Length: 451
Ligand SMILES: Cc1ncc(COP(=O)(O)O)c(C=O)c1O
Image (tube, rainbow, N blue to C red):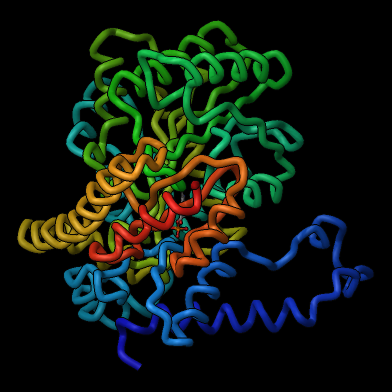
């Protein structure tokens, strides 16, 4: 097996395992052993199921299109791998592979994580008095878990947009948290076309009346599942709303989590740091009860999905607060996955410490980003031509068709051998997996499905 087909083979193995489990599945089995929450966990995964249908079509020699999986594939269908990272991992000294990392993460990696979250603004923000702490995590998922389990009170609601990455619910419900949502897009024309700021404010003020801690998760830029990115004005409006709420509700802790799983493939990767910088420059007093935290994932940006590397990077003006948060997150990591993998932390820190390899990584990243942007531009143009009402989409791995019958639309596309993923409220189009040459077929399939 060569390395580039290892990933699809792994998916195939998981799919077979899922199918095997599903055929054996008896939901009552183990009820005397599993606690009631564990018994709510069922193993069917929509994305894998639709990916399996694509695989079945290919096995029958059908010329099918794969818009199902959430990994970046080259136009020939193999997993896209940033060669610079791959090479650096292979050169890591044995001890960096074998040893544990420090519990909070390798210091050089924690330093890098802050820069990856905040970009060139990092130094300015620190000079303005902001203190930053980072904790290494098992991927972006680990960072989300660290936030879920530490920043909200058990039993409370966390504020999300109504279209969000499915696993959010699992991370939150595992911490006994509920979800409350506001619409992804405003219904009427708004100065902020990509954020429903009025609904956001309303929900936030409702939560502030009921809870003494409020956590909001915003996957921006390059939202999964739509590819939406907020504009600078939209970010500022959202930040203003949160700062205002924190100032008015002094006794309510506010945590704004920015899920940066795809940010390094976005046009404005560090737009949130720019917005924070602008707010600080305008002399905004940062309320003590406000924390901004970034859930960082290196899975996509460094194509090390399987090396489980990410970080939670938190920003606050009081160093005592960030110090305390660092301790809490380190202890949580220790009690959950022990230490995050060392070899990836070592490798990426070394890689970015050198101008030469740093630039080589950027060049590869740019190449991968242009795969995505070419596919997206072609898809938007084809949808426009065929009057497919695609949602606004800007960056990252996905595009989205909002629809109240997503399964019917995805089924109709599958009839045309185009495989997409029906999710709550719409159909996800995995541009990351679709070769450029097949993009027009996807728009055509959607146009037929809609008609
Ligand atoms: C929106 C979003 N957030 C976070 C993650 C977590 O990524 P990982 O745990 O693989 O680093 C993903 C992965 O698909 C994602 O789509």
